[in-house]
Image (tube, rainbow, N blue to C red; front, side):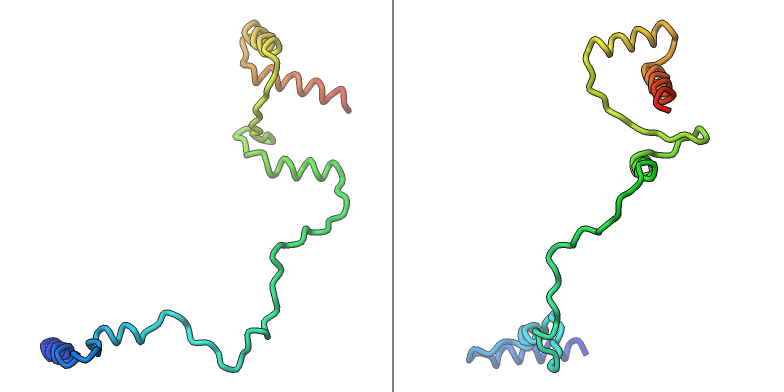
Length: 127
């Protein structure tokens, strides 16, 4: 069957001296990747979509609720129960960094532990 198809294509190509295309080329021209349009539906029937979304109207959020949302978005779970991993990048004065480092060395801790102690002490004063 393949040989017969090749013979027909060759015959079509030979017969196409007057500007006709061979069968294979005509078949590829007739096919289109576009979907046929629905004849009963005009393009003006479809409503226009907004280009941008409107911001959601939200009521005021209590500070406690806002804090919980912020931690839920930024913090990662910690292996320590009831703790989260909150990564911060601090830009502090060099002198303060050296003081924190000196205190950490004297106490045998790392700077992160010293900062946690300072933050917890400040949080107790806020209450």
